[in-house]
Structures are given as structure tokens and as C-alpha cells.
Image (cartoon, rainbow over all chains, first blue to last red; front, side):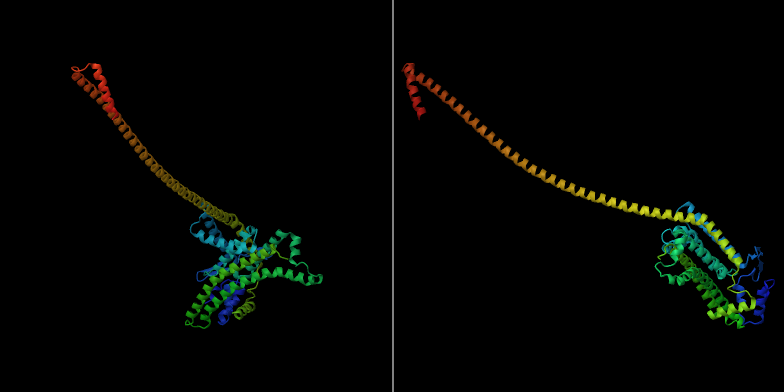
Length: 284
Length: 180
């Protein structure tokens, strides 16, 4: 079943699939679907091989996930431009722009404005882009042949890194460099306790984006793995009679994924907004 | 599920070297580049026009609501004013009617009184005129009667007395008559 997609893939994938071919109870074939790769397979039509690139010794090849990041970005730009065009004629949008507007207003009024407070307008473009990018990426994972780029820890790490920079930028812009870092430590502490507090607070700075990164990644990958595992039961058990159960459950998880896609986009944006708000209005 | 997940991660690591938690710097690079590019493009061509339009629309809605509220207040004020005016006019008209009614009553009385007085005066005049005419007629009659009597007496006495003696006698009798 899986052996015909081996062809010229990387040796890692070859190994995985060989193993999967020999022993059906080995679940590592799933990894082929959720892991990044240098090609996109469109079974049974063929495989698309992506170009390899290197810059300063770093492998910046267009991988499967990078390809889908581009696709998501392109679709998002098209959707946003179509929506924006609708506002050019009149203040009341038509058709698709209404859906887009609902999400924009939701992000603005329910996420960004209450979390950041005064001066939230500067962060609105970033927040909107973040929300739409994550949402669209999450939803992309549900399309056959496409991959969920938010199920790649490098992608979520990059997003969390941008969120971390935005948080620091917000705090420094609000308070200035020295005052911002002073604010990190609660004032009025006895001198000896600072030895413990300072490392803790510095650690706290980094745990926030780390948690963001892991939360989104784990949530997105878990759903996919569960779906593949449920479908894999059919092949592991060598019987077609388990298929209705597997497909039923997979469908259920797929619908759950639809919900999770929305919730995770909301949570990531919400927490980023909260962190920005916290660094801007530090109570210490 | 978690155990399955761990199992898969571990299995993948053992089998292929590629793992779920392998961080590929190339992907990070492309994600950051794409995201920043996406953000800049969307900010310029989508978020800015859309958000401006939303702000404009919200302020337009707010403005028109305020305007409507103001217009409503104005209308209420005008309505109140109209009602007050109406009430005032009604009162005024009532007053005018009652006034004119009273005036008419007075006028009627006056006219009645006047006409009564006039009638009385006319009657009085008429009666006094009648009295006067009567008196005059009576006087004339008296003088005529006297004349006739004198002439008659003269005719009779002409044969008996002279005119002077007879006149004396007649005057004496006439004086008696008037005394009576």
C-alpha cells in the first residue's frame, strides 16, 4: 500500500516505509504524513519534488510544509484583497467580505482590544495576520493532500518567536529599555530574594512563547495522528470490517479538528495579545 | 492517546532519525520570511483599508444615531410646543366666545331697554300731542260755540237790547259757566 510512494524520497522515509511494509503493526508510516518532507506526494497521481536550497550553510530547501506556508499565504492574500476591494465602492461590504469582516471585528473587539487595552491599534495588523494565518493553516490540514503547517514545530516556534519579539517590542516601546526590564522584577523585594526572582522572571519570559509553540503544535499534530491511527487500524487488522468504525471515528475527529483549528487560532492570538498587554501595562 | 503519541515519536526517532520535535531551521526561516511578508502586504492592501472603512462606518452609525436622537428630541419639543399652543388657542377661543356671548347678552338687554324707553317716549309724546290737540280743539270749539252763541244771542237780542248790554249779560253767564 505504502511502498509505491517510496521512489526517490529521502532515506529516512524509505527506512520508515520499508519497516512499515515489513511489519504492519509498526505505526511509523504515520510519520510520513505528519512529518515534513522534501516532496509532496499526490497519490496515486505522482510526487512533486521541491527544490533544494542552501544559504550560509543552512538548509533552506522548500520543504512540503514551506510549500504549504506559501500556499496559505497566497490564499490569504487573495481572500484579503477580494474583501478589501469590496470596501472600495461602499462602506457596506458584499458577499464574502462580510464573513471576513465578522472575523476581523471578532479579533479586534474580543481579542485584541480587551487584552491590550489602549493603543491596541498598532498591533492590530500583526494580530489579524496571525489569527488568519494560523486559522487557515489549521484548516488546511483537513484538506486531502495538503499538510497542516502548524503541525510542524519549526513553524509554531517561528510564530511563537515573532510573538515573543512583539511582546518585548511592546514593553520596551511603552516603558523604555531600562524601565521595562526593571518592571519585570517586582519592586520592594529584599535584596537576597532577587537572586531567585531574577532568573525566574527571565525564565518566565521564555516559557510563555515556548508554551505557545508547543500548545499549537501538539494540538494540531495530535488530531492528525489520531485520524491516521484510526484509519491505520484497517490495515493493521487486515480486515475491511473495521473500516466503518474507523471511518466513523475519523470523521468525528475530523469535525473535532475543525473546532480545534478555530480554538487554537483563537488561543494563540488571545495569549499573544495578553502577553503584549501584560508587558505594556506591568502592574509591578 | 498520549502514550500512543509518545510511542509514535519514539518510534519515528528510532527508525528514521526524523522526529516530530526536530526543529528545521530552514522552515523557521521561511515561516518568518513568509509571515513578515504576509503581514506587510496584508497591512498595506487589506487591513488598513478594511479597518479604516470599519472605523468610518462605526463613526457614521454613531453620528447618525446621535442625529436621530437629537431630531427626536427636537420633534418632541415641537410637539409639546404645538400642544401647548393648541391648548392656549382653545382657551382663547373659549374666552372669546364667552366674552362675545356676554356682550351680546348685554347688547340685547340694552337694545330692549332702549326700545322700551323709546316706545314709552313715543307713547308719551303721542299722548301729550293728543292732549294738546284735544285742548286746542276744545278751545276752538269753545270759542266757536261762544261765537255762535253770541251771534245767536245777538240775533235774538238785536231785537230786544243793544249790543253792549247784551254782551255784558253773555259774558256774565259765560263766566259762570267757566266757573262751573
